[in-house]
Structures are given as structure tokens and as C-alpha cells.
Amino acid sequence: MSGFVPVSLSQFVRQYLKKNKGADAETVRAGVEDALAAWRQGVRCACGNPIWVAGSAVAGYGCFRCITGLAEPDGDPELEEVCGNPFFELENPEARFAQVSEIIRNHPQDYRDRLEEIGFDWQDDDYDLQYEEEVNEERSAVPETENQRRLISFLENGGRVTRRILDAYLEERYTDSPNLPLIRRYFKKANPQLKAILLKGLSLNPTDLDLLDDLAYFSEFDSMLGELIGFYTDACIRETDMERFSLLAQDFHMNTYDQGYDALQELSIIFPSGTKGAVVRQLFDTVDQYAGPEDILF
Ligand SMILES: [Zn+2]
Image (cartoon, rainbow, N blue to C red; front, side, top):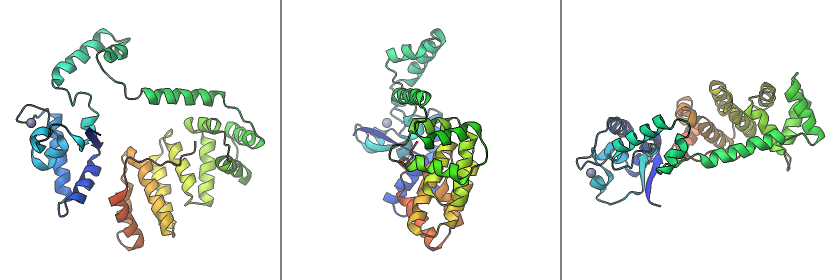
């Protein structure tokens, strides 16, 4: 593939250290922050092109061509903030910016269409479509089995979470033909009864990977990052099987990283040595921050 590959700051530092043994993490990180700050201020390469932030972090301010001598990036890293900026590749970003401002000012009702006319690509179109489809499915979903009726009645009417309710949830979760849109609806509403079921399950089995994953999904619709971190941390401390511990730590990392929490960093402080410490250090080198968990059911 050609072009840049977007990377986060931590990811870049990690990749760089892997390829350059002996480099100092703090120095590399400071270099990236410095180059990012320069880029934000509009600092250019001596040739006039925008700087390549990732390269500039370790090679001094310059554009990709001047730093590497190559015409085009081909899978080379660039900081995601820079890649996500619609102006980053443009020859003349100031003129482009003026054009966009003009369109938004003069066509407030349909500026999206107008921007598309001048070549803007809304990255989230597919996502919107999929989301809309899901919402439609959820709206028309009805309980179809006795188990689903029991579960929905509890989610709608509340009450104490009994073993029977928890089992109804687990049965739905692990059946071969779950009514996904029906249950997903309650996740998206951050239904407190649903949360109570998950917490009940975790009180009985605090290291359950699936329930923790469900709680993480729930937290996307509820602000409860601190609580989620608490449950994952507790699970990591309790778990004695190292294979499961490794899975927990990976999920913990992936389910909180986008919200700005560095689980592996925190775990390395809790487990500075020993077998768990070694597992965490190994994950540090291998976990890809962009691969989200794939076993979210709903
Ligand atoms: Zn240049």
C-alpha cells in the first residue's frame, strides 16, 4: 500500500525502540511532541512542504521527501493527528481552508454536500449507514422466546437481580441464535438493570472475560471508565492462570485505551516483577493498539 500509516504517539515510540535498540523512550517521545508542536504551528520543511512529523521527531524538521530522498511514503508511519487532518497533504492548505470556511459560511444548510462537490470525503459514511441499519433492527426487535421475555421484562420493569435473571442473560449470551438487536438496544440505552445484571455476574465471577467485555461495551454508552478500570484491575490481581491473565490484560488495554487510559502502563506498576510483570512487559511489545477486541457479542 502507499501513503502513510497513522500511528499513535505511544505506538510510534514503541515501534521506533523496537527497530532502534538502545534508543531512549523519553527522548523519542519528546522528539515527537516537539515535532507535533512545530507542525501545529505550521512549521514547514526548508523546501516549503509540510513536515513529516514522525520522521522529524528523530531526524530534524523536514518533509518526507527531504528526509528520506523518496518520492512518496509507502506504509511509513505518521502521527494519527496529522493523518486525520484533512489539510495535511494539500499543497496549499491555507487556500483550501479559506475555501472550506467560505462554503460553511455561505451554505450552512447543505455544506456537507457542497464540500463533497469539491472533493471532500466523509470518512464515516459507511459507519453512519451501518449504525442506522442497526438502529432500525433494534427498533423492530421483539422478544421471541420465553427466556427473552423474562429478560426484557426485568430490563423494563427492574427489581432485584436473581440468579434466574442472570442465567437468562447468560443463556441469551451463549445461545447459538441470540436476539442481538433486542439486547443491544438496552446496551445503547445504558439500561441500569442491564448493568445490574453484569455487576451481579462479576460479583460471582470477577475474572470472567466475557462479562468484563460486556461491561466495557456497556461503558461506551455510560460514563463509567473509572468503574470499568476498577473491575479490570481487580480481575488482573485475582487471576492466577497466566494465559487468562494475559487475555485479561489485553482486553483491559484495548477496552480503555481509546478513552485515554494506558492499562499496560498501570499494570506494569502494579506488577513490577514476577510472572505477571513479565507477561505485561511482553504485551507492551506486542499489543497492537488498533486491533480492537473481536469478541463483543452485541
Ligand atoms: Zn522538504
